[in-house]
Image (cartoon, rainbow, N blue to C red):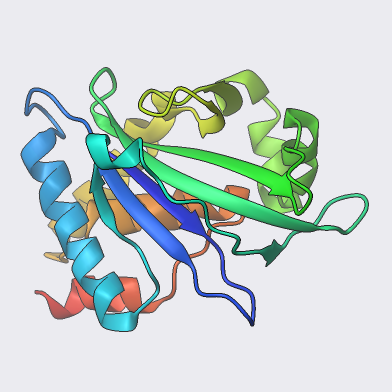
Length: 201
């Protein structure tokens, strides 16, 4: 599954897309992934923030969007972000793919991405930088994207999920996961996503 998000500016509306390409239903498999994504998309439609579900065939035909978002770089230029959430059959977890470019179309380098990571995350992430943010080919689009590596996802999501079960609290895996990993690369979900999960109890 992939999600494309371009963050809004005062003059533009974000375009978010969820794309999927899944196989066997296992620990966190296709059915579970689709269920949480459907809940996520339902809330997105209610608040109008533009996330969309797309199949892998539709992903190949993604429209170009000129949405812009102010980003922080050395030159303080405006940066355009695009986010995709894909399902990893190998790790059985979602994976955040993203790319960022300046308004003139120049892509940011990995060094620029690391410079944009907030200080509160940077120290921990730099202990294993190649295990955290890397650049690789998008598995559906075949284009270069940055990726937050999924190898630690179960490590930080399992305690959160166990605790929510212990206190009998309903959570949306996709919402919780994006709320944890998204801010590392400038993707912040509105608080209403968390409220929506609690209201579904």
